[in-house]
Amino acid sequence: MKKFEKEAMLEGNEKFEKAISRIEKLYDPIYGDAPMRSEFDRDYTRIINCNAYRRLKHKTQVFFSPKNDHICTRIEHVNLVESISNTIANYLGLNAELTKAIAVTHDIGHSPFGHQGESILSEIALREYGEKFWHAGNGIHYVDDLELLKDIAGNERNLNLTYAVRDGILGHSGEPTISGQKPRNEFVDLKKFTHSNKYAPYTWEACVVKIADNISYLGRDLEDAKEMKLLTDRDLSNLDKMIENIRVNNTSIIGYLTADLCKNSSVDVGLKFSDEAHSTMERIKRFNYEKIYKNEKIQPTVRYFKVVMNEIFYTLKREYNGTATAKNIRKMKRYYPVLANEFSNWLEKYSNAQDRDETKHFNKVIYDLNDIKDYSRAIIDYMSGMTDQYIISVYDEIVKF
Image (cartoon, rainbow, N blue to C red; front, side, top):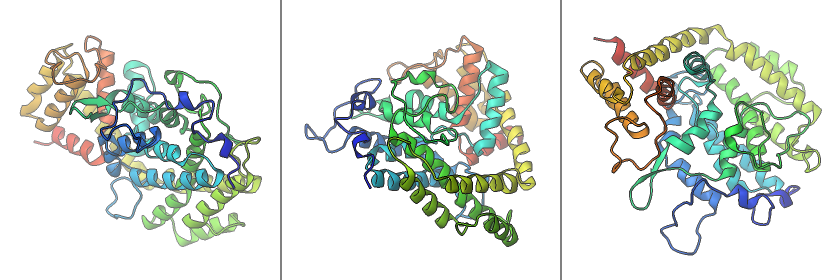
């Protein structure tokens, strides 16, 4: 136990001051000089109190809009990652407050409709302004630029999270290194992250969350797929025969992989599974991809998602008129009262729209409406923050009379 205690991101670690650094100074706590929370704990409470986090409860994990309340949603997945990473961090002697903050934030940039929605937004973004949309990059964009909280004076400000948590958002995406996941030493400008696995995470704690993310969904997706009747008892029996070392269910998968990782990891080799456990993990992943994620039952919803997202994008883009675009959008209220009101407010808050009230909005301007590509980015960002139910209601408002 506590094999990584000397590597924990705590005061005394040579990376600590950079890890707790923020883009701007955060306001002093209202409770006075005696600190009640660490910097990472302050990040945690800022995250769980912001709207982007709250919306995760109505975003798809794997199965879209299930009527069954027991099917995993995005926010439950986030909670599972927090639980697993907390177990690993505590056992190895790492900073569990940091893993907790990274875990609850890591999927904050996910779009509606899960990874299918992410792929569709990426197709639109490539077509319109030549850049891919990826949820980890969108996550850092949200916490740095778009998501706001009121400060102690009542003014809305950006989340202004620590470097270590922001790095953990970007670093969680992609597969962990097979030979042993280790953090990087370089203090990299996070804007240089352009795709998954471009850089290793900056902290051991972020490495833990990256691996916990990969552990968390394997068994839960199997359980949900059986509940949704995509898998039969025979399917799961066949998988059991393929996996000889454990009974294949959510409890045993999490327990086995977590224990194996803790046993086989060290500062020298990194966070690492045994060959047996890694093989088990890969077999389950291959089974899930074949039987669940590529299941024909899911494909009609994917085609529906494309129609929904492209129609909303087209409806908003056609109203482009430079800095007067927000005015044009408001004129749509006759036909689309909810969409017109919400999106015009969004533009006035985050862009150089003619009607932006500088005495009301203290956040920075993100979009230059003189550039149609910037306007297209604004639409993509706005859509990415929607929940499944909300984006469908917006689409229904467009197509119904």
